[in-house]
Amino acid sequence: MTAFLLRRLGVALPTLLLVSMMVFGLQKLLPGDPALALAGEERNPEVIEYLREKYRFNDPVPVQYAAWFSGLVRGDFGTSVRTRLPIGTMLAEKLPVTIELAILSMLIALLIGLPVGVLAALRRGSALDYGASLFGLAGLSIPNFWLGIMLILLFSVNLGWLPAGGYVPLSESIWGNLRGMLMPALVLGTGTAAIIMRHTRSAMIGAMKQDYVRTARAKGVRERLIVLKHALPNALTPVVTLGTLQFGELLAGAVLTEQVFSIPGFGKMIVDGVFSRDYAVVQAVVLCTAAVFLLMSLLADIAYVLLNPRLRT
Image (cartoon, rainbow, N blue to C red; front, side, top):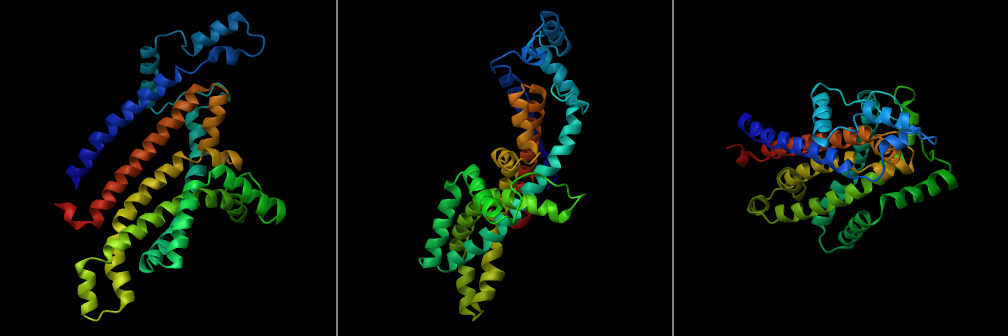
């Protein structure tokens, strides 16, 4: 296992370094001069030149990257030119919000996707199976922003059950936090549930055709025990790996959902950074998202090895 982890880390660290180069290089291709945006409407030439010197906009790109990367190694992400706050402090405030949203979304996805996928596989060709396939197709096809707006119209405008947006920290009110996070978690969890359902159904159909299932039936083992004890644990191996990767995608793909529901997470942070040309914030958010996704990919590999004894050798 140690050698396996070292090999995976040997791939992840150069990948993260390459991502940092791409993020820093691509943002230099964006149109516009950040110094002009920071100078305000007057655009005093002396102020513009001062800003370029202060934020090292006049330095060559490799020199700028070296200075930025040396700060990352020390844990210094820089300072936001819009809020004048340390970006590390902003990340520490926004990341827990997005992580909470991703956890709630994954719980909803598992509660829907796993049982529906198992039942669809056991009743293959029935109305339940066709309904599950329709649900999976709808979950993959419906845009998150449209579903979010529809939920707001139903539960906030018409019924008045849930708030239309905003975020209440857990430290202030657990119930208020859950009421505010339920709709965005449902929006993100629906698409992930469709993916998990489809893979669970496919894996269960394959597991129910294996020889050990036929042997258990020949021995007179009850069908429920065959499903729960023999087929389901083997079918869940690829699903666990998929779920780990999907959790990483939830962290990276909550931009539109956080915008619709005005949740102050990573998604809203990067959108505000792009519109205000706050490149340091954009670089930090994208790099942190890539690091989290690589970490989840590593955890998926570890989970697959732990669940499949044949890979331990």
